[in-house]
Length: 328
Image (cartoon, rainbow, N blue to C red):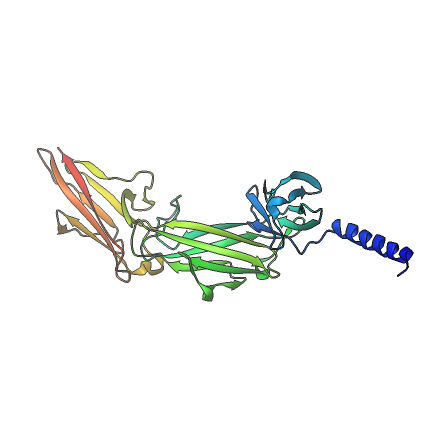
């Protein structure tokens, strides 16, 4: 080959090497994101990895929304706090090897969220301001309210989302699927234990997902005693643990069952005892007694007992004693 052409060939090869040395190839590195769809203000961890070269010997540059936020040798991890609901963050990672090759890749992280609310199908008095709590073998419903963004200011509807439900880390496939935004189950049999319900929500493209978990305590069933009026019913302003009565006094009391299975409330029965002897209640009002104290010349104490049982739920029976002090 003529020396002139050989020189041109060498110069051309050198130019190709120089161009390749500055090439940016994305397939050589990847970014892992955890969590993939963070909730607002949650810390996000990004990790750049490569199976092709040693990142610990490379200069890593992290660029967030167009601004360099971290640069250094072996800086393979970057952390930041997610923004507000529906916001998107563009993150790029660049790796420059010791021989001058540059590789890059990018991710867009979208902030999503969901709320879990639960309700127990258990008894509380009418107009009671508190929440009905879960008890042994009671029915509970958990509802997911998702916020997975479609575009600025709008969110995907439940029909476009897949809900995968778990109870105590066991997947419930038959009750999971598109649009299934609530999950019902019966609790365990042990008061004092807890039920853990988790849901994973994904859009159809599986580009967005969010997981939420809620823990539901299982309470014992309870009985509370209130003064009662024939018309207005139980005075829920004060529950009595013991009674102080006068000789010859007549009082009307209502026992209210808390957290018994209300799906079978028609089978809820009440029994009253006075010093372990049956005490009658008014017709059609099993949970009410009209207690007339005897005439006494010195203070005495009587024991009033109320027992609630659920004939169709053997795990729910509660007995409570109330001491009545009767003074002259």
